[in-house]
Length: 252
Picture 1 (cartoon, rainbow, N blue to C red):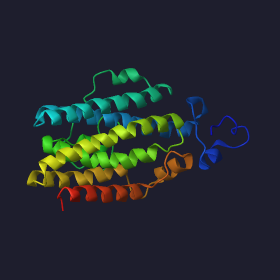
Picture 2: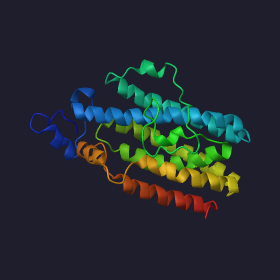
Picture 3: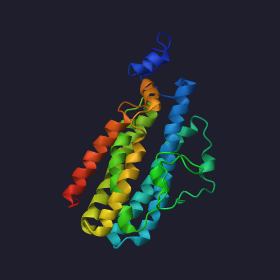
Picture 4: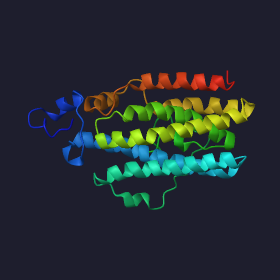
């Protein structure tokens, strides 16, 4: 369903609240546009930062299979960013600024406390401001954030802006494969002291990516059909799945 047959007789806010979808920039009201672009910008910047941060893991990987996995993740995350950036261009976003120099690999100190706040000159999630300390750390972070992405992107893949929902539904299987590659790597590493320390480090930082438990913004997004499941429910689902998968690998 699109607005074409309904916008003449139903206010767009009511249409969206009842599960309607929008299909093109011309159908989008200003407040919806602002929230949609913020959501897409966060995704694009997070994928670029993730790709840049994980690129270093290629040379730290212990073997050919691990190097191929790290290379695939680095490439495909950049590709995911490009796909969503193409949607943003339709709203007038200047894609050229993404071609200009920007340090997507920039990170804060390891012990910095950012919580869920924006930091620096882009819209990446706070978790992508923290540095990776080695290959094991990169694998652990990829696993935990990969599980989180399945829940967060699965939520956005149901959003009311149909072009974005369709792109994210295409992206989700590849993001799942990234997580699975991480699990395969973590299984080879095993529950070493280093791996356990990485799990303890990344768990609270990945948890922050879901946002505040009580959020006025979530209420706005839900009214627009851009969100459906609240932050805390998504966070609990992620934590339960992460605990299950880590336990299966001996991380009790």
